[in-house]
Amino acid sequence: MLHAVVPAGGSGTRLWPLSRAQRPKFLLPLTGSESSLLQSTVERVRRLSDPGRVYVVTGAAHAVDVARQLPEVPGDNILVEPSPRDSAAAISLAAAVIAEREPKAVMGSFAADHLVPDGEAFAKTVEKAMELAESGLLMTIGITPTGPDTGLGYLRLGAGVGPGYQLDAFVEKPDQVSAVEYVSSGNYLWNAGMFVWRVDVFLDELARHRPALHEAVRTLAAAWDSNDREALFAKLWPTLERISIDYAVMEPAAAAGKVGVVPGDFDWHDVGDYDTLGRVLKAADKVGNVIVDASGSGEALLTESKRNVVVPASGRIVATVGVDDLIIVDTPDALLVCPRDRAQEVKAVVEELKQTGRTDLV
Image 1 (tube, rainbow, N blue to C red):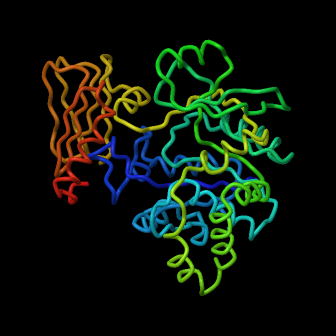
Image 2 (cartoon, rainbow, N blue to C red):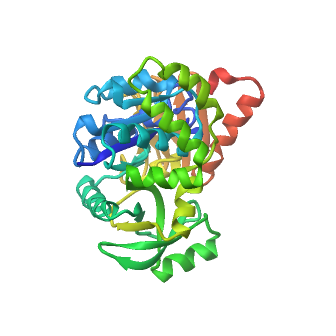
């Protein structure tokens, strides 16, 4: 049985003004159904884990909403970070807590804001990773590329091993020419940030490469069910290094030949911006307009308009005439309009609002 960890952090600034610091994207219904991204992720891992083996790592500001959305997950399995310290701290803490309960458990880590429509194919791929994790490899799941993408990191495959491969190297986000070469070679997968390992193996690697972080999370986990937990968090958590799990553990472990990868031949999307939503959600009409009804009562009237992504979340109707390839997001206190091909730049609006002191809108 897999112990499934779901890191649920970040504010999703490229999905502003729908996603806010107090209600980030993983809490929103952006899946084409009534389920939030977080709920869809937990439902997906439930094919491999019972509720008592599902853990969510989230910030203090979101803990109540997470618990409300996931009533079947035990309260002790919602691990609350006092402040964000990046993925290495979050995932390492979960591994240490699980190790206290089951020292050689197999753990998987799957982000709360990814969209995977085929849950069965996902589960079969994770099972292959679990098989190799039992042998002592730190496993990652790579997505078979559907085309060159410069917005994603890549995984370079090494020699075959069981149902997967040795991981030769993590590769940073490439330029367009390199991305085309990677995909054409057939020897690279997209890095989806999905990990599977035995917790004892992972913690040994953490101790080797980040001893201070290892000592802190083991101390916190040992006190998890005691009255000392809050005091230890206040003392230790602010001292932890801000670093991703890739840089902290996985890249140096891969260089030592200790990381494996299995290909995931399923549809996968990192729901990071409105253009991505426009590509993955079903169009509302025959001309490619996508309406994201995150409020449950939105309404849009699109006349002679094509391929727009419209989020009517203010309670009023959004109407367009003769416009194409736009993002239009209408909320009670903010309206966003921008071309779809500039969706990545929405996060700059959030930065400008912060700089001008409009934190009430962030």
